[in-house]
Structures are given as structure tokens and as C-alpha cells.
Length: 75
Image (cartoon, rainbow, N blue to C red; front, side, top):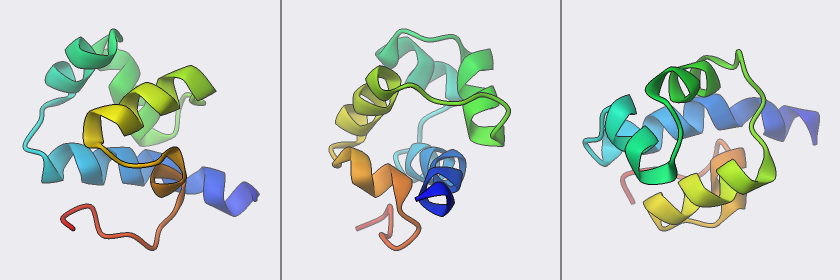
């Protein structure tokens, strides 16, 4: 399971870019700062379950999708 948790920084960035969003736009929607989004994407900050759920909801995907390297963010 640790390997899956290492995937979320890349997945958040992939989904954000696939949805043509800036870090600031994603941050505004989920109620975080752009700096925090940047730290999540770089793996410098661990994500909590609440933020993971909010980000997954924005992208319309299950939380497991953000933890997996297998799904394509463009569909």
C-alpha cells in the first residue's frame, strides 16, 4: 500500500493539468492555498483523507484513482 500512497502527488498534478487548472484554481475550489497544492504535488506534504476526497470530487473520480498510477487522467 505504501507504493500506492506515493502516487498521489503525480496523480493530482496529472488530473489538474488534464483539467486545464492552475494550482491556484484547484486551491480555490478545495479551500486550500496554492502553496499547499504545490507541496502536495511535489510530495513535500502528506495529504489527509478530507483533502483527498475534496480533490477527487473536483475531478469526478474515486479517491482510489488518485492513489493509483494505472488510470489515465484524460479518460
